[in-house]
Image: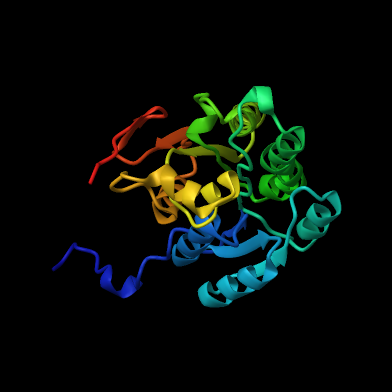
Length: 262
C-alpha cells in the first residue's frame, strides 16, 4: 500500500539484552541459576560466578554462558574475577544466604559473622570492584537480590534480617550516590521462595526445611524471582525500579501466611 512502510524486511527484533554483559553471583543454584538462565534467554552475555565450579560449568554449558570461580568473601577471588571482565553492563548481586534461626539471646556470633560477610561485605566488595566497568558501559545496572527480611524483622531471624537490612540500606545509599551517573540501582525483595538449599542451609535438616513451606499451596519458586529480575533489567534505562517486593499470594505479610490443612 502506498505510503505505508514495509517493516517485514527489517527482520526480527533483537532480544532486550543483546550486546550486554550480565554478571550473576551465587549462580550455582536457586535464584542465581534461574536468573542466569532467564537472562541468557533474554539475549544477555551471561557470566556466572560461584564457588562450586562443577555446578557452574554444567549450567554454563547448558545455557551458553561463561563460568568463573568466585568467592565474594575472598578479596583475592573478587580481584581475579573482576580482572577477567573487560565489559560489565549488569551486576546481579545474588550471592547470600541464612545460616541459623536462633534468637538473639542464643546468638552464634560465628554464624552472624558468616551471614554478614556473605550478604553484605561480599556484596560491597564485588560492587566496588565492578563499578568502574558499570560506569564505563554508559548504561549500567546494579541489582541487589534482597529480601522482605530486609524490610521487616521477625523472631529467630536476627542474623539474616540484620544482614538483609544492610543490603537494603546499601542499595538505597548507592542509588543516592550514583544519581548523576548512568547506572541504575535496583532492589528485588522476595518473600517466601522455595528453593533446594536456602531453608536447608538455615535449619540444618530436610525435615525442618520442609516444615517452613508445609501447607503453603504455592510458595514462590526461583523462576518467579528471575522473571522479576529480568523484567526490571529490560525496562528502558531511564526507568528505575527502586524496590520490587514480591511474595506468594499465600503470604500477605512476613507473619501472615495461609497454610492449608489436610
